[in-house]
Length: 323
Image 1: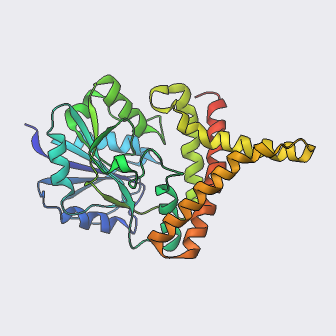
Image 2 (image 1 turned 60 degrees about the horizontal axis):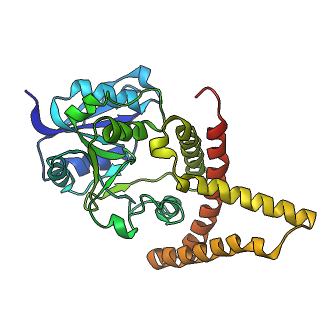
Image 3 (image 1 turned 90 degrees about the vertical axis):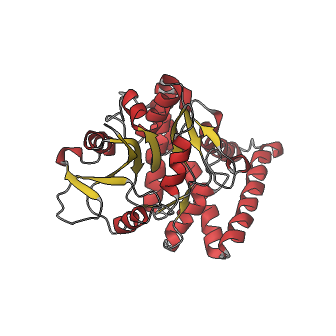
């Protein structure tokens, strides 16, 4: 019989330094009836409390395969898919369980915030992600995300789901990375006709990729896959908001071209002025939170670079063949 508890599945390549913090946050949960399944690519003999450690060499760079394999080990009614750099508050599982017991709710998610003890470069990555100019859909500061609501697409860094629904969706698509979470969310909302509930109380602290190189590499990967998904899964990805960085990049390059030819008109500067105003507001907002002028300036610079990187690689995904 399936028990009414959580099976927590964490896919990793190898034991990371931050994993111990993740495990400690799980062991401290007020909902104590759970078990952890750590699915590794590289063999490890390390003993971890309340954890089954499994080595799956064929799953290198394939978290979807690891998560699906974790399902075969778990005999729990609910699953929690968790990254190895996530820290959960003690009440997380208990609150997620309340959401999952609601009628027609398949999955529960919440804000992904930057870990407070992160390095300054990881904090900058967090401020960029949480900026309204970067994450309009999922920013925890956005007004309508301060209340429980439904979402149709969300990262699976900390995603709780009913086991029966996960099975009904066919698990994660093992041929997609990144983007396997988008496909799962699409199956939940379109195939099962059920809800993914966003609860602002389900805060998870995320250890971000450090700015600039690791962060920008992540941006380029996400942008390329989102461009591919516009063609493959338009239900989740054919939205104007995903095209904005591309349109902004085209606007800047075309403006420079017209300026070079001496054909630039004064009214062409209006979109740029609007962008500068929004960026200034974001700078002030970041400074109010960080109280650090260097962080605020670097965050704004990171936003500008991210828009160009996203726009270019999004276009690459749109025209990419063989996908």
